[in-house]
Length: 230
Image (cartoon, rainbow, N blue to C red; front, side, top):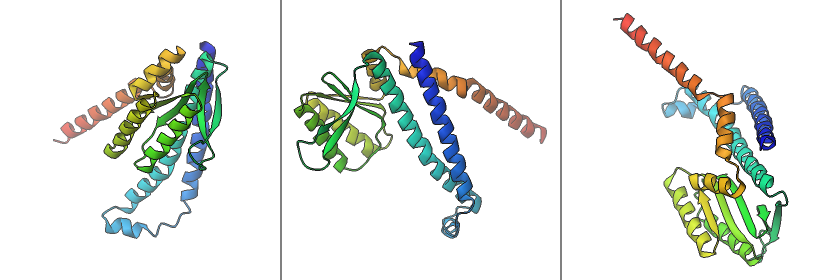
């Protein structure tokens, strides 16, 4: 188990370093951007400074979302491989149509075809059809479609789509786990409490206590400053 934790730790360090590099590169690139569109921002009541921050967060946020998802999905795969070393990532031929030619299975263990998602926030109605087709194809190949998604989307339409997918999986004798159910499923299936492992790593890298302490000190200073001015 310690060896697995060390692998996840190294994986986190690698993703963190790459993410930092990407953000720094994009931040530097944006210094040469054409900002003439800030005129429209100002028309809408957004200052130039606010516009710069919004553009920066939007650009760097894409990297964060991408890297966070890839990291969690890879870390989860390490857990599955730890318990079932013969499990593999594979593809199955699409028996329902020509496009796509194949569907990917993130982790195939015996008859369990597991799809690993960190979050699915799509609001595209076609997504239901695509996922339903994917699950049907997997079932036709003799496997059980299992969807493991660690974080639910937070917008109404996206949530409804996930609820529909859960019903579709059930209708195909598959399994669907979202949110806490996904973490619990992984723990029960592999014996690895990934959430606990990640919480430990997170607290080492960005201690919550320190963050709360700094916020508390800032509030105290703000309060003292306000009292002193009276």
